[in-house]
Image 1 (tube, rainbow over the protein chains, first blue to last red):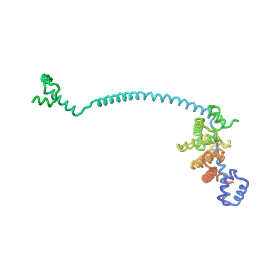
Image 2: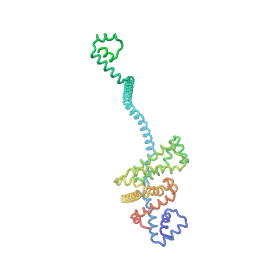
Image 3: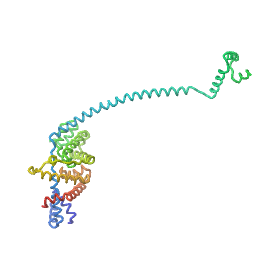
Length: 163
Length: 190
């Protein structure tokens, strides 16, 4: 048997995991092989040495402390919910103000844009407006009255009549 | 006596007494399992409570497919790994703390200062060697040696084959032999 294979068996030997046949093989090998014999002693000591790190005993109030912790967590969870609402309440004022601004803004935009859509302002209108301003500037009130006898008139006719 | 699964099913319906009974059965092993990862009694107690808190919170989702203890050790392993990766604690320890932390002494006559320090050295050395192992080797050694679990159970907890667990244990033990040689030779090679 090769030493490499025996070493794995030696580890199992020290933890009583081998059947009788393998145990006999290991025992026979370590009687003859000094290296494996040394390894066997180390492995045996190592497994026992680990026991030197003893276990600990929990405090008697472990379970009581656990239930206290559960109660505290539940209390904290209950507190967290109103806090959340409080936070929301604070935000509500901001949200309300923003909403009012938003609504007023939207209404203003609608009003402004709807007025713009009602006015159909063409280049012809602009020219007419200019003529009206000219008339205002050049024609006196009495002259306007005199001109009314001609009924509807346009600028060209007026100019011809006047000329 | 009711089985763990029966108790867990009762706990699922909101029976806190059943959960208390489950805790009574397992808290020592869970705490000691964590202790091998942290080497601190105080932390172990806190973390053991954290483990049971997680179990308690997820009790409604429990399905009795696996052994309760396997499920419990899985949760404990997650808690331990989170702890060891998030915190590396360096602490100086007084003699009183050594006594407090060394664990139960098998031989109550050997509580002299020298024995305590010797035991602390052994404990710290084992802890440091195990700490240097890859996760699965460390978990396998701790569960097999200190919690007395079978390779099958460990395989289920860490999610690998039984053969792989055996390999982890063997590799770990060879490293332990190598690194703890001074202690092993001091004890005499009988």
